[in-house]
Image (cartoon, rainbow, N blue to C red):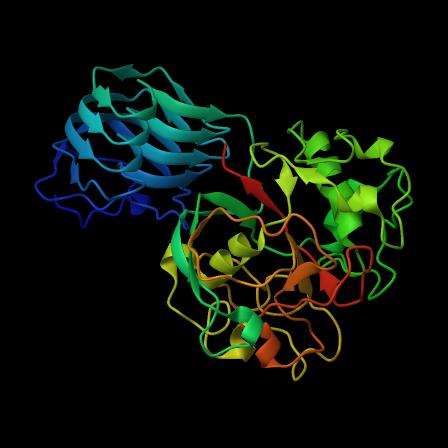
Length: 413
């Protein structure tokens, strides 16, 4: 059989299968395979992938809570770029590969292994491998990277280079300049009232745990939160999930020791630092936010996040009824991320600053300033504010408004 095979539709293999064409891996980096495959002791022979520019190369590109059992891959010849494996390039949320075997060759640059290239809460049991595995970074015989962390409602955004800004937008969206970003996770949804209450109950910083605007709507975005409040939220969530907190105030990463959140400008809170290598939760940088809103390396060049028709993807002045709405009820963008145009404004990490024409790599904004960046647009606003390149340079970090929320991100380990 050739690459027309769709593994997600096969529960049993009735005969050995020889692949005679180039295989197209099942599951993109945004859409995982979530089913079950029982090979029933049969084998796939001659699996061929040969593309040195291909990320997520393998029998499966991406699985989530999937099961692959009793299957042999014989004579594989897999060559890719990053996240290259015989069976699964990226396996999440209790994916199980059991009683499987592989022989042949698996070659790539980073995250290369015979069974799983990048594993989050997944495992391989009763395996047998004689595959020749080679690469440069994070190379292993069975699993290249095995993480106990769960991404939850986070979307993987593959790194790349994009043109940030707009030639037709406001003056502070210019000049358009080249930005290169490493891969990262970003929230599939804006942080909801329910999310906020779960994390912030019992905080020592006198931060409200229940929304005082649009109350009792657990799936609506949380709003009226300041940038200072969010620093506490991110570190509390990281600690609760046994991750390394990103933020430090005076060198201390435990927000229980940060005292009451100020309601006016405060030098020590403004001086909070971010450990960009930590695996905990944080705000996206402005560049990460815009790249994700544009659809990352899947971008179709839309004006708004996911469409050129604003009403398809956004709650804004003409359709919101002057209120927030449940997250994820409009169409997503190219990466499967929701509400990056309107519903509520979203805080970014960066201090506001003017663009330059210089190319940048993983920029984090100015080291100081007066206001922090807002993106997205809010339910009170018209379409012009909801463009993926629009920059709101209005809000000081100690203020929160009824149309101002956020989403979280994480560095890829």
